[in-house]
Image (cartoon, rainbow, N blue to C red; front, side, top):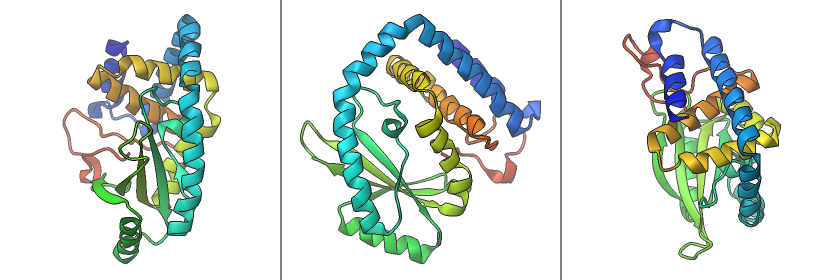
Length: 241
């Protein structure tokens, strides 16, 4: 499987083929759907056992997620959008983190400074700036629930430009969270659990997972950079995730 994933990722993201984003993402979708269907048929009992084992973890995270959504909305005045592997149903057994996207209509320095102060006052620390050279730019803040205990859950709040987020990432996450078949979600979680020790393949699999989400949502924009010579469009060199 690792070789297949490496090959399809390299082929789809090869710049010199001059393919349009829709064609590239459609190729990802076709490969990904077949891979997931094949794995589910061969390993259904193992997948079901994995999901059953994860159920107590999911129940705890759901309570925390519901509570946090209310608190974040009250804190920032914007409805937070869950966008983690947990909300998509593809989380691992050992994962205890929740991600929330905050689409900001007025994505300006003054507005970001205002949000920074509020998050800081509520125990969230700014940890990194992602996708700084493209429209997917976002500011990541980190906090914890039950910090220092065996029930610790990491929280990430991501401040995003609503104009770009709602027409790209939101549609993608809506498919991944709400429209993808449950059998696919369960299978993806099980595959991730097996690929986790192989960091390079694990990262490529997650990239393909997001890009097939785009294709299924009818959004044809590459989230990950093309490779293999030539100039990068608009100077973009980093992913848009």
